[in-house]
Length: 318
Image (tube, rainbow, N blue to C red):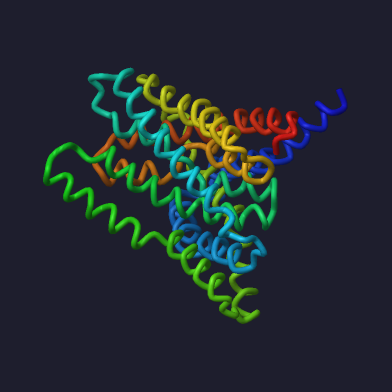
């Protein structure tokens, strides 16, 4: 009984702070302490400045041998690609005539690895976990963007050319990818970074997760759920139940344990990325459905992720 309570407390210690920050964001928005303009500006600061700084510093200050993580990164790419195919197949089976296939599919596979998952990893493993997670985030961010553009683009030759252009533009201008690649470059070449620069960068890095979680909470709007909820619930089930079960089970079969297995689970169990709304709107998809999926997965991931951590910790796998 004592062990069960300890595992529950351990699980709650990981997801609890994230839950409180999300709730605080909701409360601050409802009480008009923050507004939509603040959320838009702060979100841009996080995406363009503080999050790249955090990922960059996590890599350059790490003592981890990243060359030994190639198998983990390779597995993450393979597993997420296969799950994308899995989600695509069953979405088209479940909704054969639906006009929003792309939005549903994206909601089912695209994880919020850069905010929610990183917060989970930071609470669980600290700096060593963040450094390894940064590499995982870089790889999956590239994959997610390619898959999202493919699934959201209508069929046709001209659309294919447009999709290729969108992919190239998205990847080459993504601040997260740029920050991580610069971090890998500095780490690989052992380039010295002046202490004044790292200290200033750390100030930015320390802002990232609290500010990002406040913005995520403030942008939640459960009341926006419309009458046609079945596609949103379908995507939510894929993202919060099938993705962590299938991807984590595969990692177990590949022999991952401890930090690596925990990272795979936390990344796959995180809610749908907020970027899916932006991408759906930019590509002419159903932005309302995308927002509904984000809201549902963000709320319910707090419960599914806590349960998953409890089970894995109880089995001494993480």
